[in-house]
Image (tube, rainbow, N blue to C red; front, side, top):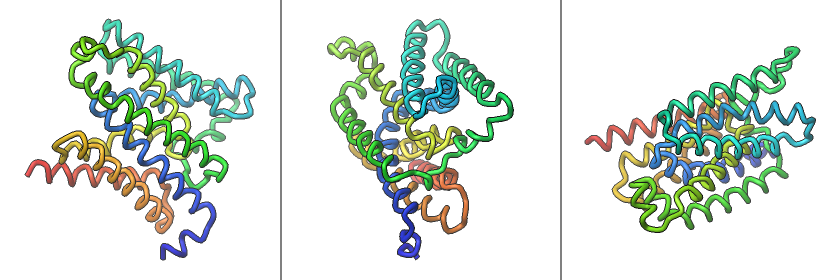
Length: 266
């Protein structure tokens, strides 16, 4: 059965994309969960439409450029506002996400053209091309390098930000770089993962791992395993039952989460 499925070029490309996207989302997801940034990744996903809209207005041939640059700006603005602590973080993120998505929808729906972009809501990993895999692989290498280099700093920041500052960690700089990396991953993955699902793929494998992990090493390892397992099995099952790949991956990740939650409680 598997041999028959992977005889097609688009399935091979999708499989390679899963091997790049899944561990990257898993690695970064550990810190997203640890630092309580679930709303942050969700907001970036929703605001991807605004990045697309800006690219359309500027008539850019590659919309990814506009999406990534907008994602960086949005992430940095969000960090600045959060540090003012005038409102709670989840309130600020929800307001900006709602406003950003509304602007994007308003621009893209002019003259009834939103149907051209509606596929981005659920994504389509089967549409990825061989030339695009190189960028995902580079992003995987860069994201892994960042994670390993800043792991101690990010962990200290997630435990106690003031303590991290007293240890000469440049908290604001590390947080800004991490946020920009999250924005880059979200914006470049959104076409294949989907706006409505990107946050779930950041959160579910890491949350499932947290249910059964006793230290950071286990936490990271289980997250990558759960993420890869969900991605590969979701790709195969979605092809067999003719359902969009993204939702199937998320459902498998959700089953793993509830399974580890029950196991962890025992």
